[in-house]
Image (cartoon, rainbow, N blue to C red; front, top):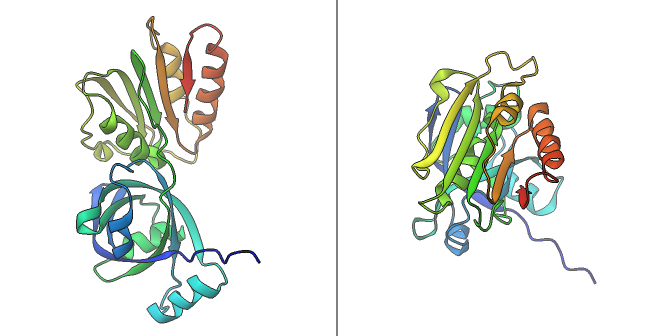
Length: 238
């Protein structure tokens, strides 16, 4: 007999506020966090969203018995196992998207489901130079990767944001140069990230990349890096 799949954990909101103009940080609490590994910042997780007006008891039953609630993939931005807390950052898309709407309305005591975390995106650092590129949706994983790097790491990071007030502090190594690229009209495709990567004067040595996001520009960057792999070795794209 196949074992029954484990139900998602129930989490409650401790605090929610705008980290920047278009990024909401939600701090979640739950006893299950105490058993999660420290250092899993940058790992994927699943957030299960309750229906508007749904009671906690009904939501717990739905997590256990189905049907599956609305679910979205996010990144563990910070985790504090001893305090049973973690931070998840949500891009504020207004109330059009279910996750954004939930995060905008979240406050102490609001609940959700949680599954994960999965493996960290970049698990080891071995390079002479690092290249990081991310759109708004992937800022959390890019920031977590930069903060996990050796303090003597060198390289470059490009972030595409929708407003100049979305620049945020990242505790990256001092040898990583940051560029914040503004793309206000998200309904139109952007070439800024692609052009920035192509224009970079690629150094000699081992290069490791962390390229993340949902935009067509991210896909184009990955394709460009694959074409570069034959010229620059070793190069590993994440």
